[in-house]
Length: 198
Image 1 (tube, rainbow, N blue to C red):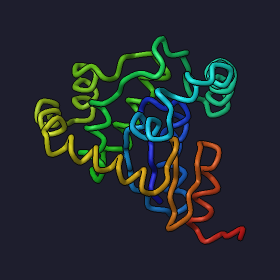
Image 2 (cartoon, helix red, strand yellow):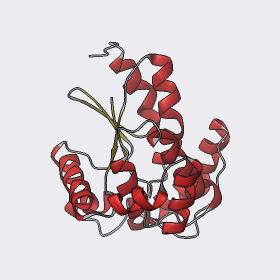
Image 3 (cartoon, rainbow, N blue to C red):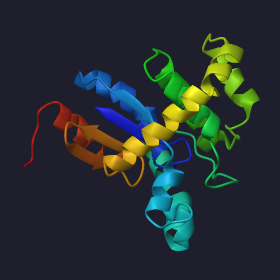
Image 4 (cartoon, helix red, strand yellow):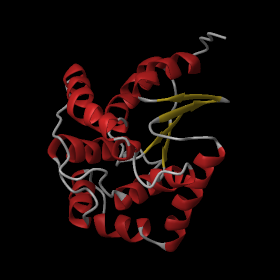
């Protein structure tokens, strides 16, 4: 199952925090697919997140729905002081590490810092500290993550998201089936296990 996510996406937060453990329980392999929502939104004619473009929706999502969801899942929540927050560097690291055994823990730590502690996760020092906690050579990882080759890979991954028809995050892809939203995570896993509704 492909897990398409963005660190700036508030609903990617509970999905990223839960997906690895749930997939393991279900016996489903996952592929981490970090991508940039900005170009996707611009292609749809939006100059920012729909939660900014549609103020009432943003007020609901960030002030009502997210606190409830995080309480439900036992996750910390702190209303972000900046939304949407730029998170390009951690996306580049996540892409670089997408097949490494530590990628899931890296993503969870970034999400918790962002939405649980209101930390600016695009700061190199924040990312470096997290990499060090995970036992990685932070200088080496950051150098590779910010290489032109890896930058181009992220652009290509974002292009691939658009070709697949993605319009938001998180999105889960199982074969030709798309499941959009944190609340569709369990359905995507059931589908990956062979349960079909259609």
